[in-house]
Image (tube, rainbow, N blue to C red; front, side):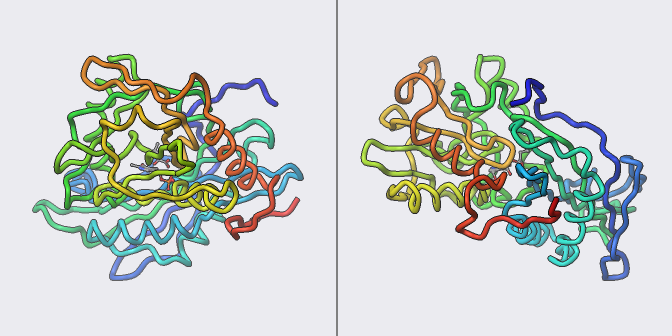
Length: 336
Ligand code: PLP
Ligand code: COI
């Protein structure tokens, strides 16, 4: 194991991929070494938040080869987000080409096997300008950029305390299901307040009734019950997490658990034996405590719960190629 302690921060790499949508079509794109872009000061992305992004990772295998994990699911979700933001969807073929080209161009930045680090891949679509009225742009830019990263939450697989917030990240019929920047900018204040109260992140409740758990910051929420159930929220305002989908499959097929998708009351949080945040950046981050008003509610015994640990080992093991890819989630983009 490496002793480096890289967090989730940006390191400039060799190149980013850039493609333009003009006259009703996406061009085939190209790599550029400069990680700055020049756009109209009247671009819809910066005035009106007309943009969408993705987050996925490339992993180094033990033999030095490079893995992508379920990356075309990110491509499909980006298309959905583009549609929600009235942007021309990035064709899957272009997404596929852009992700592989960018990762391979930056191969030297993929952290070595065994460090727990990976190459974070950030696809982004933005509306350009000049546009003054609040309306969709005519031209767009699709980019893919990468950065080596370590754990999103300090300490990696270590239970954190989250703060149930009274702010919403998305409205009941708003943009919560899309991965668009506005959902995140609006979360910075609840995040700041959570941190000021000694918590790692804000725990968002359903925006209609503020009764049920929605999401754990920029990650989905799961809980484990004493009936061997893997419990996840049903909500119209959360992102359909690819990590969450994978954990449900692993919990059911590898751990023999029952998957329960239902509204989860904030009030019942203390009844679970384990809880966690899951996502590409967060991987699995156990939630050990939740601050609700001025009360701290503990979830399960101290430390990382056994189910969260097993799910983490299975997920990471598949992602780096140590465990057989029986669900067909891995694409090896370069053999060593
Ligand atoms: N929820 C939100 C709001 C997110 O930003 C993310 C990160 O992408 C997730 C959940 C987890 O999704 P995924 O597992 O696809 O990364
Ligand atoms: C991801 O897990 O990819 C995310 O979107 C988190 C990110 C906002 C830092």
